Length: 118
Image (tube, rainbow, N blue to C red; front, side, top):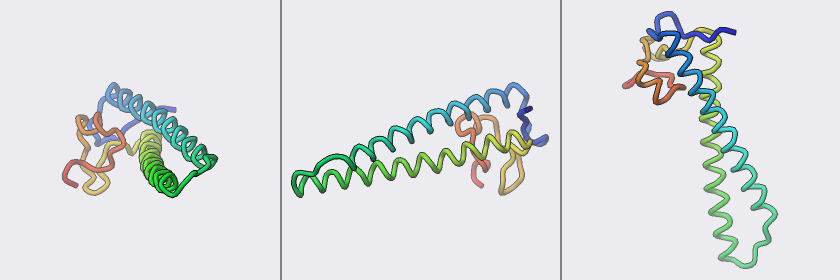
């Protein structure tokens, strides 16, 4: 399969390859992070709580880990959507204005859906 940006996105083939690599790296990192956070949550379920203070600390830790996992899953969804746009040839255009998203922005946030200020 050929990865392509939208014809109006003003991205070279080399830039598209670089951005695809960044998306692949982000995907791997996020999957790994989600696995670690899920394991931490599972381990927390197996721990025996000794007193009220321990229970409160455990609950706070579980809530924080759950929030981190939710954010990671949301970002993973964005990364997967960007990878799909590359496969469909719709990558690199702002969803709000249909103007090109600049390479500098995509280099920092390769899953960006909007140009700056949109």
